[in-house]
Length: 154
Image (cartoon, rainbow, N blue to C red; front, top):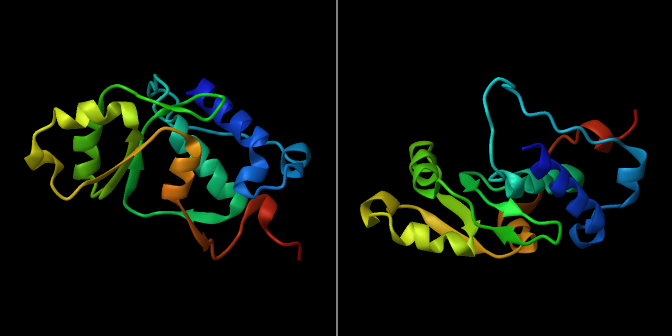
């Protein structure tokens, strides 16, 4: 999990302008990513694309789509790699009311192995890189009340 957060932040720093982010934010402010429930193991790189999407949302102050789930490992070059446990993640997402799921193009074979009745009412978006993820996940709608380093001074 720590490595996923580090890779997400470093990728964002090196591609800040691509996402409309002022690169000076990273020089002026520290970013700390805290994942609660420290006693709960969080192995694997599956949260990489989710962490990066959250950071883009934070720094651009743009909302992420509702009812969306995503899973995938990222590289320092922004490639989205496949992850394991797809069947279990799809079933959990469906139980949680998720309607759209973003995954690596290389995980398509895992979806093809799941019975069609389990996939009913789910839309899958297959991606190969983080630019695709951000285009699918982050809306152009700004948050109503900016917080933290983006709040205007009083």
